[in-house]
Length: 86
View 1 (spheres, one colour):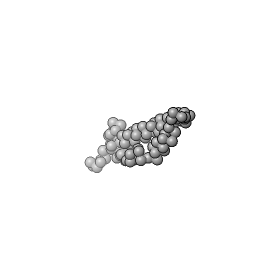
View 2 (cartoon, helix red, strand yellow; view 1 turned 120 degrees about the vertical axis):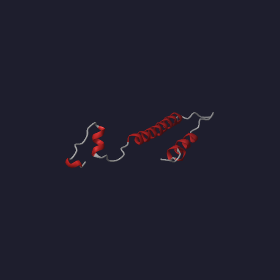
View 3 (cartoon, helix red, strand yellow; view 1 turned 90 degrees about the vertical axis):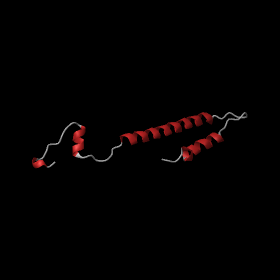
View 4 (tube, one colour; view 1 turned 45 degrees about the horizontal axis):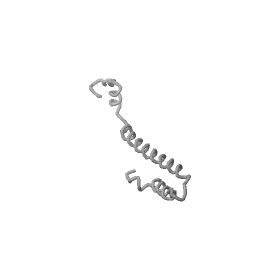
């Protein structure tokens, strides 16, 4: 998760594929459109993973809350026990 994207196997595969299917003056590679699609798909994946991580950090639960805390969130107060307990 903390490693650079250039170290990922998917990134290395895309770069190697682009290098292997370069268009030269001697040939026109039909697979070039495919490679552009793969690169766009990988970019979408990277953006989605980053957005998911940001949303997860922001909205992920912080653990179980006490009954008093939950009651306060919805605008209630728990009843007091006789004798000042609770």
